[in-house]
Length: 291
Image 1 (cartoon, helix red, strand yellow):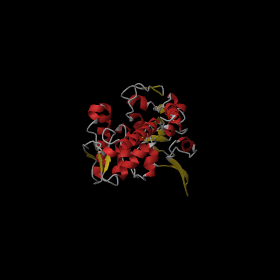
Image 2 (tube, rainbow, N blue to C red):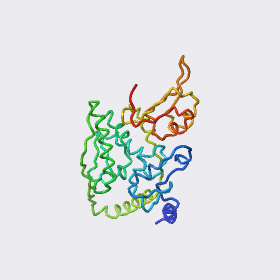
Image 3 (spheres, helix red, strand yellow):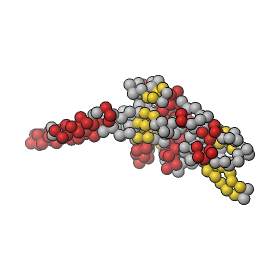
Image 4 (cartoon, rainbow, N blue to C red):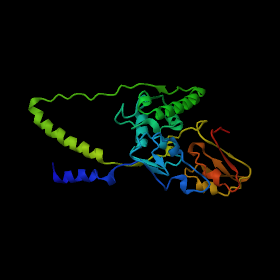
């Protein structure tokens, strides 16, 4: 093997290049006053998160922490945006984990009801959770609840509900190599194997904020989304606008003056606005209602 290639592989295998599921403190809510969030710690079935530190030895990369994080503060080696985009390209749309499709998510635990809705709103959606109960019971229970909530809204709106399927894992086709080309194929496969091995060791890290995905899909909000009640005590001071990490609040001006308007699609229920409102004029609601 080429000495330079050997060096590159060893370098890429170095500890500093190993992807880890970590929490970006610059996005985490812990830095703000009057709000407390430990959703990632509460939901982790492996008890791998404590005081915003992820125990890599315990973490099984299920993605449940990503599903509940209100600010997209979870950093991982999974390109969830790419996985969802690929699902939208499938016909029909099918959500699968890597036990079924090597290009799928490592685990489907990062999904939540709003992400499911964004996929099922315009096109039929199926999901393969047939292996989840045996693989990770906590993920199975989470998905069962989130799918049921999304299906209830789809049914009320007269849309097709999410279908549960069992996709047979694809088996790699056996290649037949002619004897004359045996050694040529051997050299080529060795070189390709080294290339694949090298690429697999490149550990990229991604952040995923579901709100950005929903906005990009121009998703229509409904009762699956969070709501906000703003009382007449609001004096439009603007503090909530500056605090909101997802820009779910904005000013609206009319003849009566300036008022705060709420975008349910962007709200992640982080609580920064309601927790810090000087007039105590804001109240988060578990469900949004169109007015």
